[in-house]
Image (cartoon, rainbow, N blue to C red):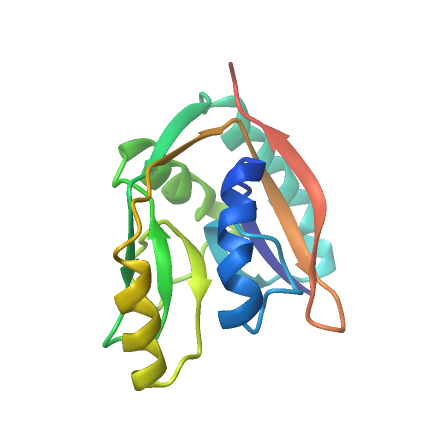
Length: 169
């Protein structure tokens, strides 16, 4: 089965992101706005107990934290993706690194850059038009990261929560 690990920002950030995602993100209906903590990976059913135990341990060893989302950016020319940037906080990167270990470790295709996707799979001209208008917006959000979720992908491509893990307060 295909799994992933993510955290969801507070509602006002999700509402802002969805106001663009519904027009510019073909994955809009498949998953709410989120910060990916571990990109999708395949896991055999018999490995699931070890993965859950690992994620429980990560949650026990990690304190909740707040992140800033200060601007809109893009991965162009690598990918035609527009996103809300998450400040390069050590806390997010450390959580990502702790999660991507042991039974669910795998080599990553790209360097980890925490973000919330607003638009993807755009043509070059569409990307430049949309990014040109979005980068003019004043974006200054903060959100508390106090939990993360193991998600699994359904047959229709949508993602749903398998289990949530609370960070320490």
